[in-house]
Length: 298
Image (cartoon, rainbow, N blue to C red):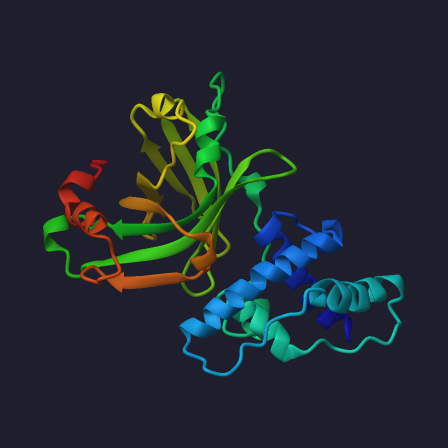
């Protein structure tokens, strides 16, 4: 294996560690944890192959494939001796793994993950305000986001489309901060920080392709009373978000976050026409009411 091949494989293993365990480096993951990742991957592989109507027997991974074959025999062997003779991993198996994660193939995965997120560039601290960590903990998990870009004259909208993006909110094991990662079209990867004060939720986001930030704000009425019930679960959040357009005009967007089942959750961005049967009726009604959702900046 060439050094470039090693770096690509390392990128995949780091991605798996972050995706399933929120650990940023393959070196921090134990053999037992790699077995857990294999189990999760196999579930995704079976779901992905079934969804694509593949009738052949699904080629799942062995329980020790990631740890013994890729970590021990590839990465660790290389870093112990850069001149060691190391065979290339099976490209077909690597492609099976990344297809289960929403990519077309292994090369598509490599080309889509060329930049690291710089969370340190995002600042949403508020002085003299105590974070509502109980609420933040309720936000952790996988979500779908439905959003609508509102035109300057809502009644003259020519196209009725909404967008559904897959995303995840999680707590950093190192800093204790709450992060969000969200998919986008054309390999855009959105990332951000989340915080909550009283009954307000704030998100600031950027992407690996844009030099602009998005700000989200949501208010959940009576949330502190609801949080007293340990069985309480958040399934839907409504946000007003803003960003600066390419002509420097502020844009108001109304977005709805809905909780997603992790087993059926894929980090892909999917768009649907507004009359699609896959869009909940409650969300369509919210999106169609452009006047109620509009923010007047002028």
